[in-house]
Image (cartoon, rainbow over all chains, first blue to last red):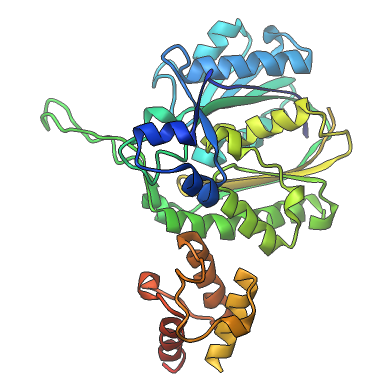
Length: 321
Length: 74
């Protein structure tokens, strides 16, 4: 039993519009906007690495929740692009926050990461000794994007979002899953084994994507996951006040809305400003809704993530801040 | 009739009149981009209960009708 008591987000200061992207890549604003819904994205500078963005979002979330870093029992960071392999991004953030009572864990479920993180936090909060858990979705996707690949590089952006969870009524049904047989459709290539036995072995770990296959998966799984989550929550699609989907591509959201039979205005969309920020996207969207006063206690919200893995996750909650 | 069912799916998906969709209709001319095409293929797969591979080879309504006819009669 868990509820969200605070949210935060933090974006890199540099905003690159589609028009600006035209300077770096052979593309155009109209193509990007009509194909994806994206108008701009934020891109990190060196002092805005994953942990720095996560830290910024964490500060905001703690302030919104009205608790101090020392109150945190656990920090979970969902990321595909960590600050470093070791120490984890969560440890980096914990150190900066001074949250010395918190255990720290990074998880990677790609674009479903925030949902996976919330599921984990909810289970942890069932334990007697845990009161407050911070879940962060943070990405500097620009570290793995191939800016020579115009079919992918325009899609992704950097950013972080965070939520503080506490025991209580709020989150209802969570479903998470994956289809690893489709992993190749969104991959960065293997970290090749290279050591004193194998000799040097170049590893180029840039993101590649089979867009059509990922689109197909997403369009099918988005409504399916929401329906499963609603079933678990003993609620109906008509009960929902808001749906917060992972912000991958507006065409996916439109196709899914059609399949669910729900009007587009129930779906919160901010992809035009953020691009696809993977694990951070739902967290950033939730914070935006919260800070804009779009959520009131009692509102029924579904969130759904899908992406690399291929993974998916959905949850339904009643806003109870 | 396969053509009629294909026309119905296309008309619904693209918000067109079935009458504006003929055998010769070319997807590009109908204003369908690659993502629309993926969605369209998925709808056609559901409508006819078949799997459509080689979707890239389907450029006109006639291509689709011929492909489906061959699969459905198997």
